[in-house]
Length: 55
Image (tube, rainbow, N blue to C red; front, top):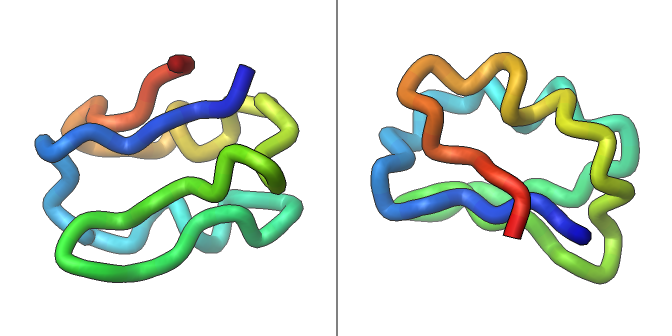
C-alpha cells in the first residue's frame, strides 16, 4: 500500500531526498506516485509535520 501526503504538508522538502525510488514530486504540497512508491516509509519517518501516512 502506497504512502500518501495530506494537505498538512508544508512543502518543506524533507521527504523528497529520502525516497529511494524518486516517487515524490514537488508542488504546493508534495505528492507521492502510488505506482512508484514501494511502501518503505522513509519519507514518513522524516516528515516534521507528520503529513505522510499509509493509505
